[in-house]
Image (tube, rainbow, N blue to C red; front, side, top):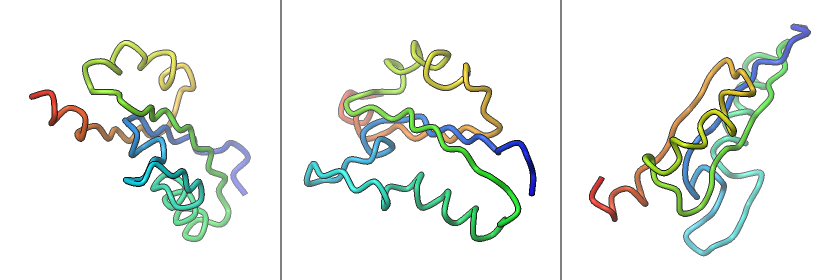
Length: 92
């Protein structure tokens, strides 16, 4: 087993956070949890650590101020960025 976990940060809006269209939170079914399970199944000798930096209502320009605090300070090996729903409603 690799001793050091592979750190993956997910940076985005409420979809990243785990919200659904009905306002529910389903922790095991949000895409970052599913992605982690997929990686664990495919690479059983590795450890994966996931950072969920998704916040409801965020837009890409608004979230940029929090990039260092919520993502970069963790020194992730991979960052997945997902904004769009809130941005499209504001003309970005």
